[in-house]
Amino acid sequence: MTDEAPATTTKSMDDIMSLCKRRGFVYPASEIYGGINGFWDYGPLGAQLKKNLRDAWWTDVVMRGCNGKLGPDGKPVEIVPVDTCIIQNPKVWEASGHVAGFNDPMVDDKETKQRFRADHLFGMYLVRPEEGESVDQGVARLIKIINEQPFELPYGPNLSCVASNEEEAFGAFRAAMHRIKQDITRVPDAAVATSFTAETRKGEECFGVCYQVPMSFMKAHPTWIPSPFNKPDKAAALELDNRKSDSQLTEPRAFNLMFKTYIGATATEDDVAYLRPETAQGIFVNFKNVVDTTRVGVPFGIAQTGKSFRNEVTPRNFTFRSREFEQMEIEFFCHPDDAKDWYVFWRDWRMEWWQGLGLKGENLILREHDSDELAHYAKEGAGTSDIEYRFPFTAPGFGELEGIAHRTDFDLKQHEEHARAKLKYFDSTRGELAKNGQPKGEHYLPHVIEPSGGLDRGVLAILCEAYTVDESRPSPEFMKFHPRVAPIKAAVFPLVKKDGMPEKAQELHSELRQKFGHLGAIEYDEKQSIGKRYARMDEAGTPYCFTIDGDSLTDGTVTVRDRDTGEQQRMPMAGVAAFLGEKLGV
Image 1 (tube, one colour):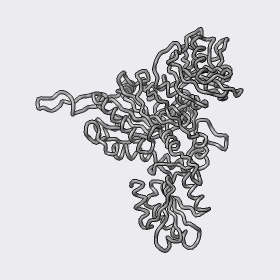
Image 2: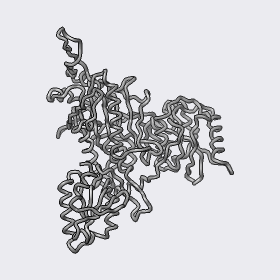
Image 3: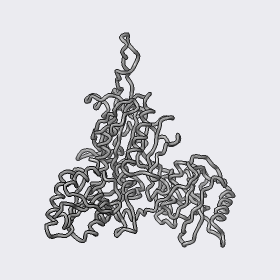
């Protein structure tokens, strides 16, 4: 972690959500009935944007084999697709550990009736500034107060940020949790977080410091329980209660995150099934089928996109944490000895792929997990990393976009044991050499490298990255989509609705639609002023607009306008298709 403070975003999530609703990117699900928490629908522009991102992943990963990049073995990467069921035999989830272990320890606040993840609870010290006291003086006084407390402070990462509201503080703290790993029992001057200014319920300013409060500490100090930070009332959430009474939080209880359903019209509790919480297990249970029915050989990958469901206790942050979401997953099978090299390959290539779609610069990072963050399926030394994006609601911190994990042979081993199936792979290219100099072959369970990306989170990151405000433009809001994922690829306008211009424009529109319609919409619009039409296309993120005017009828040229720069130039109408094809990379 560098000493430099992370840059904060100036984009407003409220403004982005407003544009998404207004222009038909994302709607609240069942909105006319008041909506349903944790579920979102995609409108016309959002559905096409999501399809374009999914298609880009499918094309580059499956059809083009990582766009032709050679693997660490010097050979082309081989990937095959599957499409598995959302509902699997319940034994699948018993073997994978989801039935017994896919839960979060939750606690209830007896006072507010709110429910929180026990491992996400953290508190905040606040002190009101004295008259004439500077921020630095207030921080120093706060440090002194903390260090003089009669009990030891909980261990955990400290926060280094300046935050002006609850969302910023939460995002920065979450980022710090991942990056600063140190055990402390007190908060010395060197370790205490930079204070931030926040408004309390009464509008007074306070200096504050955030830190994690693990449940083990709460149990050890039942008379000292900080208010949960993420209460509905943001102002109230910024106040700390040094309660001198019994704990207001219940003991942690496990809540399974899988959606339960029943199979059969007259189903009973004996017919319980689950909606899948991940697409990965459908791949693992079909590993032998794929090997037996295709000509693939280790190393190779199996890819899948599809819906998954997690009964999140507190879905939040727009589409970032939803109860129904779509994944883009690869399970890449390789020999255990080669797993490290393949992990590095997938980690680096997946980062490059997201960068190629416009998620560049300081908003996108690749973060390697520390040893204490490894998942249950990873052994010590197995690599795990996250590609993270700085969303407006996490800034100056980051939120996970895609995870790349070395899952070892955990999943295949679990399914082999529970299903009593033979899942070992026979590799004729390995093993001891026979007398004829040829390898005898080797039976083994392949290790797995899993690049698992969130399609909905990818769409959200692209929306946030694309959202641009330029007050110097007639219409200041526009979406700066990479042309490959833009839902509308181009628009064709007649300058006015007369003098043969609509007919000429429709002719060009039909040509472009036939050639590029499989990539996204080609819009035609003849209503309102040309300026308003440009503004509409800017908000939709359309890269290029072509306008037919009076000169088009005489010299066969059109005006092409660039979304990002607003610049316009004349070009022959006959060359429009070639121009657009080059810009779209087809």
